[in-house]
Length: 71
Image (cartoon, rainbow, N blue to C red; front, side, top):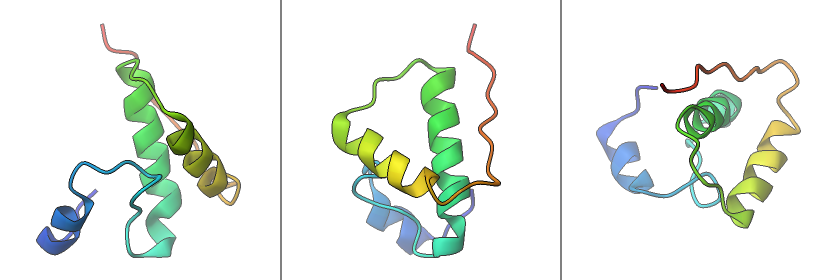
């Protein structure tokens, strides 16, 4: 997802519990891509991250998560 350099710097290495794109209309897509990446690479998720992802996903009825497991 393309973002401005300023937005990218503000995000740094924060997960969705700490940072979401400034445009609310991008939250569902961002979270779906975040989850797809976590699933693809079998990455861990902490409690705060799970909570934040669930809160955003609750408002994303039309968003799907698509991923292919890494080999």
